[in-house]
Image (cartoon, rainbow, N blue to C red):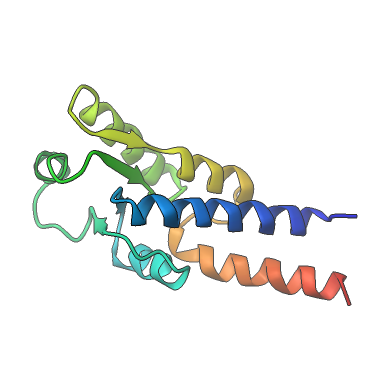
Length: 139
């Protein structure tokens, strides 16, 4: 019988595998800051990751440059109110431009963690906690 911890761990691992594949296929990943990029690298993501907050330009100027670099941008912003608002702003701004915005992974991670993770940088430690719970239950 599978526990809630096992289901969450399995879902997150599958989601991260799919994310890794998309990144390797050339999709651009957008995060808020450098710590979020480090967290994704810790999880094995090897594709191109850009940070919104690490650019001296405003978000709009930044997006004007970025949307010409790839055919798809995967938005992986924080799950707090600011990240949610930024995700909406970016999606609306890029609407009609020749780049697809993808928030599937953001939605999937957010739904799976159910408020336990509010910042992307906390995802690696959350996964470690899930692994420990699953290991403890299977002893």
